[in-house]
Picture (tube, rainbow, N blue to C red):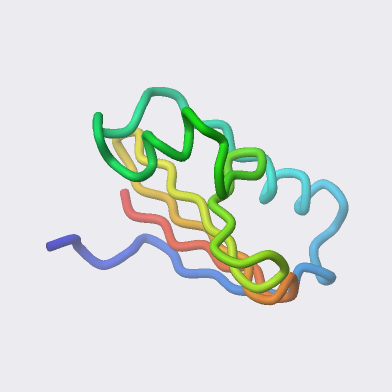
Length: 88
């Protein structure tokens, strides 16, 4: 099981500055997910993906997971609430 996250953050998207919004939205992952996983299929086909974000339902929920030695999970709920959880 994972340890406690280093930080947990949530705020309305409209409260972010332009640069904070760019930093939050920009998700560039290196590497590839596990062969045969749903994420591998999404990356190869582009289905349910939008610039590195997995779109669960348009304008309702999207998320991204970046795992490169650390774990970062971001989500956007109803195009209003931005969330981020980070584990070291």
